[in-house]
Image (tube, rainbow, N blue to C red; front, side, top):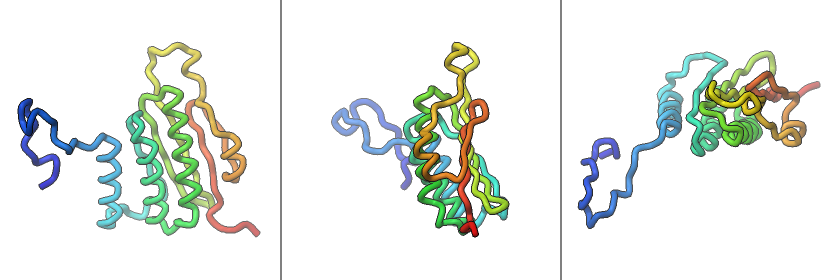
Length: 164
């Protein structure tokens, strides 16, 4: 029986200790749903996909896992290692910058894989806090064919096929 179907915990149960299970976070549910869609073939032929992640530590491994799974589904597994590393680093930077939600977008067209990490922040923040997120520039310079920022969005591109 899945964790969501178990009897709720009440104080005093099991010697006063809470059960070892807990419900997955939004990011975990999002990743499980995406993995289920890939396994059942319910992904269509689209070459652009976006997800909105909760600004929690689980966003980093979720972004990596979903990037790798989607690239595998698109038969682009050769780019998965670099893409998931860079996507995870940019999501971590967005978390450090105080994002409240993080949008991860992948697209594959014209021989390029493009990854965009956008962040949403509260409108109640000070103007200085709304600046573009920091970037792991040395890592992007070394691994991406190009990268940049546009407001709260950091993007990078990777070649999908060897360049002649």
